[in-house]
Amino acid sequence: MQIEQLEIIGFLRAHPPFEALPQEALERLATTIDVSYYKAGHQIVEFGQAAEYWYVVRSGAVEVFRRNGTLYNRLTSGGYFGEFGLLRHGRVRFPARALDDSLIYLIPHAVFLDLFDNYETFADYVEIEDRTRLRQVMSRREDANDLLSATVDTLITREAVTLGGRASAYEAAQCMTQEGVSSLLIVDDNPDVPDLPLLSGILTDRDLRTRLLASGLGHETPVADIMTPDVVTVTHNQLIFEAMLAMLRHNVHHLPVMKHQRPLGIVALSDIIRYESRNSLFVVGSIFRAQNTAELAALVPDIRACFIRMVGEEASAHMVGSAMAAIGRGVKQRLLELAEAELGPAPVPYCFLALGSMARQEQLIVTDQDNALIVDDRFDAARHDAWFEALSTFVCDGLARCGYSYCTGGVMASNEKWRLPLGAWERLFTDWIERPTPASLLHAGIFFDLDGVWGRTEWAAHLRKIISRKAQGNPRFLACMARNALLRTPPLGFFKDFVVESDGRHTHAINIKRRGTGPLVDLIRVHALAIGSQALNSFDRLREIIDAAVLPLGRGQDLYDALEFISTVRARHQADELASGNEPDNSIDPEKLSDFERKSLRDAFLILGNAQKYLKYRYQPGRAN
Image (cartoon, rainbow, N blue to C red; front, side):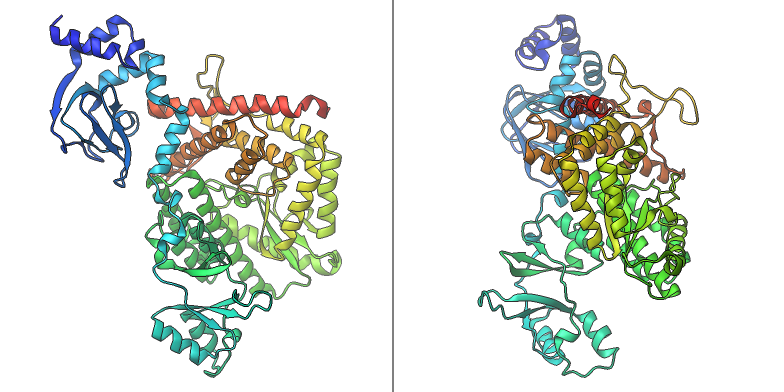
């Protein structure tokens, strides 16, 4: 063996992760390594170029950057980089530059993969570093996405322009013209705190056109008569992503940004667009302009294109699920508008409910419709139900035409079983919690994730409070829910290999919803009920669960990462199927994943399995009998 190779072996043996490799592996490795010299300031690898080598710093110093140009890491002798590109898509994900004159060992792609596949300690160390493997993977995804880190106050370029509530439309138009703005915040005097005006509404160019000019009103009309009251706002430290979702959810184009109850500025649609992962805001706008069900159904290709592009641009599963749920919510709201226009006004007040993934804001492109209806306690079936049956049928049929398939279990407002007065819902939920049965527990897993999308939406919040209060104080019910949450286990065998379907249409595949995201959502719901959380989204529930300290230290973040990664794999599979011209589903073949994805998915399933063991320990499902 040549002296240079002996030197390489001696260096590698002194540094992890090579120190655990057997001598023969080190000797083979030494014969494959090339050595390159880079002067200070020289670019070693560029973002997006083909990933050909794994790099180990022999001497000098190297800086590794995120794609947005911010520093990710600084490496000296023994440090390494480039593994993420080799394990992921074969493209450099983190560019690197020599900080000082540096000697770098270049290990060929195939050699690196051979070490990674055949030496578990080596692979673990490369992935783990100072954090868990999955946490490292997910933090890199988060670092690469501005939507998850930038706050709305970074979009504000000027102070908000305000006007008193007693001003006229003419004065408002003059003010907007002089200030060069497209919206004004309308404020009133605050009798309790004189120097803190009350925000009473917002006036936009569109309001002047549609509510003043188009209605033939005079220019002396008070702004209070044409403004939009009940303003949707965001706080200065909320994420741009959250502001985007607020626009999607409420179909608004201007968001006042508040700080300490004072308006800091206004974020407009145009400010959000440059941070948007695709034009889902435009899709929602098109939904509300649709004049009939056929026009809504014609938007399905746009909705699917939105989904594909969001996934392709590596938006987080949390973001994709929230945006797709907002789109689905918009479709449902527009169908309800169209139904009321056709049927006339409702005979009694009502609230149309979204259930399941739409309510949790975790919807992907493969989804069925789960919905229900709350009617006022004055509801008389003989006089009123024909109208609500027609409304529900119109909406459920319309949703089916728009890609939201009928619920095979009949959990839809078109089923008279799920059109109930508010008092009946209160009694039903109380009965499910106090006297649980196998059937009611299955329903609880669907109906306890509920959100109002139309009408008296405060009724949905009222029911969530009842659920939260009664479930939190009922150990037997929690034990029953925990038992149900343990029925679906992760698809891992005794030796931690994947267990796939052995027959049927999806042979050698895993239903990643039934065996992955579904069980995770179920166990997170149990913990959320136990702490009295009223959050709907599983990620939001996890944050409250972590704050409540009901899980061992670090387990909450593990669950967060596992849910995000499994959901990401599921979303990517559906997007790939759509892009290939196939109908998407939830069945993935683990052999078609990269080595990196398989290992990370296995890690996520192991986290799920351990979380189920803890669920069994904490809530003792055996006492549910």
